Length: 461
Image 1 (cartoon, rainbow, N blue to C red):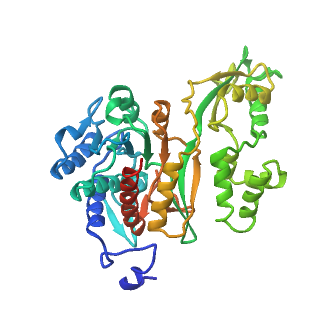
Image 2 (image 1 turned 90 degrees about the horizontal axis):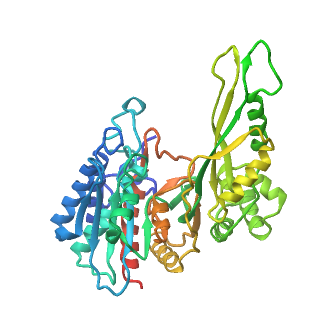
Image 3 (image 1 turned 180 degrees about the horizontal axis):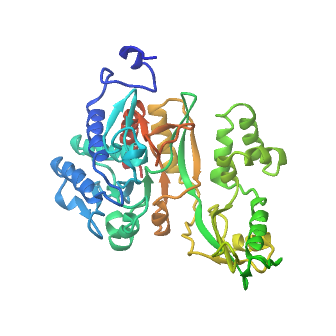
């Protein structure tokens, strides 16, 4: 059913050209469109082109050439770094986004994924939610500050980088190693994490990412002499491996709440009703409650919040259909809580596999992200800006179960917090997928939120 345009303007989930729109939101939409229509995939895209397009806007706005730099370790992998000079009374703050996007096949989409399209209250296109919408809000905020002659108490730095989604030239890693002075900061606000949650058409909370899990994979391998398949033996390599994986599949690492997840559960208990809300409250009071742990463990999101997880992701074995397998192997991917230690997880895996014939090898050294408690200054600013745009909405600390470029900054001693002004439906996540989209109203609100947050932090020492 289609509603009259005037009525659509009243719906929080929709907006149309007939709705009121500020000049800053209009500019942000133009930037958003420009970014979406520049292909920045690793295979065929050009990150440098997108970085230069934004640099052109900053130079035209009056930023000195020395404060607008496009740096590229290799062709087409450019990174944009912009600095708004402050009074120098405090250390800089870094605001981070990435310009690259995941691959998008034309055959998978109803239209060209690199065409920016507004339809029925949504903006469509590859990168709308991950994360060119956030990039556009940052660019618009830094342009507006220059236009309004806003001078912060400390330098504000914007970095839009390459290869967060994968590729040979991760921009944040390279900038930290080769151009540290350009991005050195007291802390970083990473708009590639955090953000608002919508459930059943209603804004329910704003999440601020204050921690993320650690990525670590292991190779499991069983070898023996093999032989002819007509003469099977009990020590089959595939069976040994399968038995070990079966034991792992039945195993759960212990529940381990820390300050971020404990705060997330405590505040989430006031957001969700029914059994979920009750279980979250119980976990804060008694993390050993078996019934609550069992119910929450059945929900992948909360299971991953409560504990380190290890799961089989790849499997291979044998070389011919008429030969006994001489080798069988698997890959087990672990996502460690930031307060857990890789050595402890490896020892636990060996105990669970319980088979000396299964060789366990760490595939790559884990990228350890030293964990620090939430900075109350950042939490206070995010809470205040959220209250200004969405009065009464709670802010909930969050742990990202995946990974972001924040790991490179954290390892370099720059605390990093995930904060995005975008709201998305918990039950309609399309990042990396077909027909990726964001709500038009959500984007417009994010433009106002990010400007308020950036300027608020710029005034706070």
